[in-house]
Length: 88
Image (cartoon, rainbow, N blue to C red):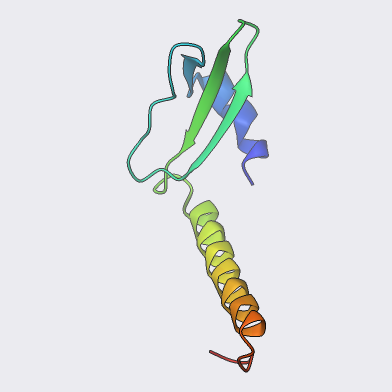
């Protein structure tokens, strides 16, 4: 879902360029989905931020994936501890 958006964001200049040798990229509160790519400059990356209000479908997809991962981890826990696995 992220990859098709990158060319549009790149063309618009909607990214933050940062030097990995001097620090970490800036964190944006509430933004959990990002994408980074190398640049032509040594040690520099571009970071694209996907804001929830601009990409609600992406965040919905991510939330569903998190919920499924949690459900799977609970099932594995139950299997490892000899508990009945079934509907929560």
